[in-house]
Length: 327
Image 1 (cartoon, rainbow, N blue to C red):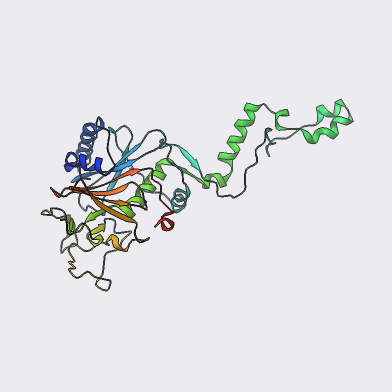
Image 2: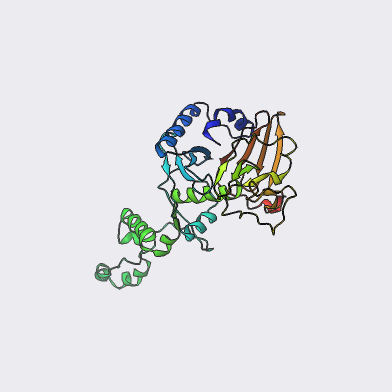
């Protein structure tokens, strides 16, 4: 959602179920304008909000030239100061982010552990003996032979205090074990990966919004006025914005009858899997809204009276993996 039309789409956001707190609207708008000026962006967009257990994340992005390839994402929790999102995550971290099925905590420095084992953990009231702890039997040798035979029943509490036990076990389990190090991810990285996955699969624009020049540069069509009522009902008229997820169409593919290479260089959503993962409707005889069922909370909306449109995500950042069984 372009910050230039931010105030015009507040009502459309409410109708789409993505309302923003009224007190945050002017502060958020001013901070986005400041973000645009500080980074010399041509345009700045409010991407969405990811709800967490404590403090939500607001996501925005801007670009200087290419509105698709050169986007830079930012996040904030106080809607005043924006931090740039990391982009150097590994394939292992991407796999870990896909496996986590819980909400984000709300702290960018929070470290989350992913357990890949299927073994059920056993609960006990006693602290087990740590591998690095050496149990000495000299004191028991002096008390008699019977105590020596009972040495096998010595617990960790007999050697060190409970506070020392907790400290040693936490240190060994979290830092010494290289397996745990490989199965942890910082929430800031998980947030960036989640935003990228949602953007790849759900960020859509109407056909004709982007225009490809003969030299290959992509710009926003200066005279685009939105889709009319006869066009919004066809999924072919909505295109994915991310070229890495949806490769440009070639003439050898299934080409629409009114194909135009200047505006049909992105993949439309009618080929998305599973079939039926998008649902649309017109509300209040004015606002057209199309929802993603694969990533609940991702919506595209347009004011049919003015043609002003935008994309917004408002959810927990969790993918609906059960969708193929629900359709």
